[in-house]
Image (cartoon, rainbow, N blue to C red):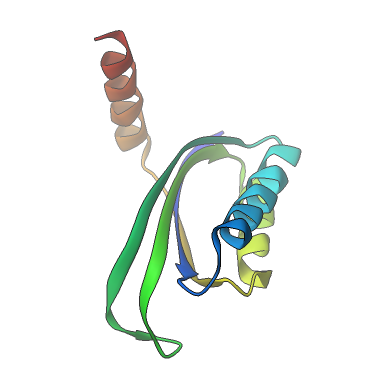
Amino acid sequence: MRPYETMVIFDTGADDAAVNGVLDRALAALRAKGGNPGRVERWGRRTFAYELQHKREGYYVVIELTAEPPAVADMERVFVLADEVLRHKVMRLPDKVAGRRAATLVTAEEG
């Protein structure tokens, strides 16, 4: 299992139900192939540095996960097909960074 981080930018015109539906479908596709979604952070509305598809704002969501490449490809396919998604990016985290984050989470939960 490899550590990944995904950032997804949704259209601000999409309602919460549509955003939650896309996230649920993507995480279900990930779990179906043995992936393990971790923390899902909703950053909320942010202004873009430049226009994307004639829009000035987007709703940002960051997902941390561990999975094998085929599972990540299935999750990414859901984002590509969803009309509500303006952009997405999947980044594989180096093992040193992923280990540091896991240690920080364990320490925070204990304290």
